[in-house]
Each structure stands twice: as C-alpha cells, then as structure tokens.
Image (cartoon, rainbow, N blue to C red; front, top):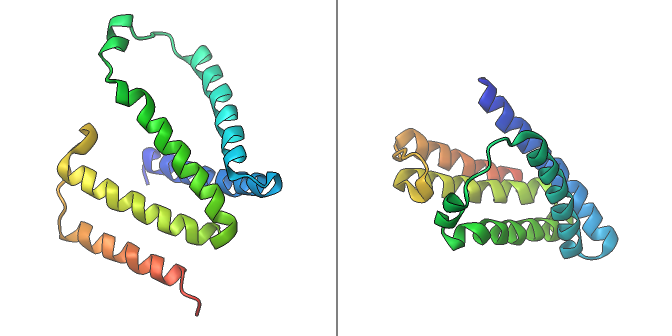
Length: 148
C-alpha cells in the first residue's frame, strides 16, 4: 500500500468517527442541523488556522476573479446537505448501513466522473475489472445490510 492509499484510508476512518460523534451530538441536541453547524464552525476555525500557518503564497485578486461563482458555493452547499443527511440517518439506520450506502453512491459517481472526465478529474475509462468492482461493491452493500 503506498502512502497516498494509506492517507486515503486514514481519511476514511476519520470520516466514520466524526460522523458517529456528530450524529451523537445531533441526537443530544435534538437537531442534526445544529450538529452540522457545530461541525462546520469547528472545521472553519481549524482550517483557517491551518491556512494562516501553512499557506505562504495566496492567489492574486485577478486569479480569484477568474473562479466561476458556482465553484465558491456549490461544494459547501453539497457538503452541508450530505453531512446533515448523514447526521439525520445514522441514528435511524446505523453507521455501517449509512456509510455502506453513502460509499456506494460516492464510488458510482466517482467511476462516472472518471469515465467521462467530469469536473476536470483525470479520465479513466470504465473497463471490465471496474464493472466487476462495482458489482462486488453492490453485493457487499447487500450483504452488509442483510438481516440474516
């Protein structure tokens, strides 16, 4: 396993832990939306501090002006929607079930994005082994969520 795969794996583990903790916060506060606000607020504070201490070369105003307006907001809107849904769903369906379905959606969209090169990601055509991987993933989700 290379260092990037290991870092991606560790990122996934932190996502699962933060989801469980913030879903617990949402249950305690009786509001998944309030838990999302808390999560995003703390994320903004930590990320802003990381930027202050690590970024040395900020983009010019001309560079900033060239960024399409939708890129400034769409990612945050989608994050807020997804995270709030996760915090709502985890207490109702369990962490494993929720993550298995969420990862399935992520992987299917990732394969399509790679195949078509959407959002400027490197183009990686779908082939038979990838299709078998998707089938294995769907089979795994069915097995993870079976009651027997």
